[in-house]
Image 1 (tube, helix red, strand yellow):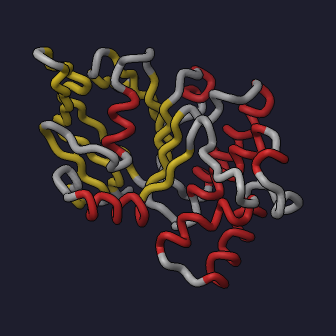
Image 2: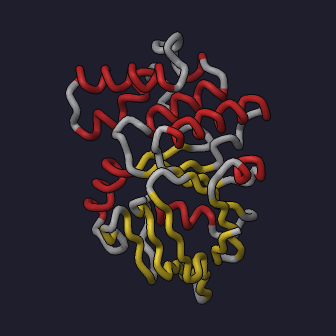
Length: 224
């Protein structure tokens, strides 16, 4: 299998006054195409910092990040933005939907920023809405949806640009156990169709469903 993500001795530190905070310490990770991987650990362990690195929202202090064999560690802001828009899909715990837009319009947002035509955006959004089970909710706004339905919109939106990597930040964290199980089943279905997922989670059940589980402690990452 082709390698999608490779982290080599990745470190990140922040200067807080006179104190240096070491958020990531020599992190190494390899994720192959089509794998479903969990990253677990307590609050403050470095999971959010690592997610920012994987999502090209920040740069490492040291080390390298290869995404599809391209070193994205030191790209400028415009190049990082292009990588995010074309290669990475984000799924958020709090959904991050635009309240004024309908289900279809929310799914279309990444396509709009990519410059897709209106007809192509609408075709793709309708296709994805059906894929995640929202065929009957196309013209509803987020306030009219349940938490599980909002997360389904978020998942569909993350797939809009056919990304090579899906990053999910506590995707079941705001959901009850049954709805969370339904969302996890949807993520597993996407994985079954070839999507590559890295899921940051506190939920051990999510970790058990993944092919690999990494544990982060004090900025250090180890495979379980």
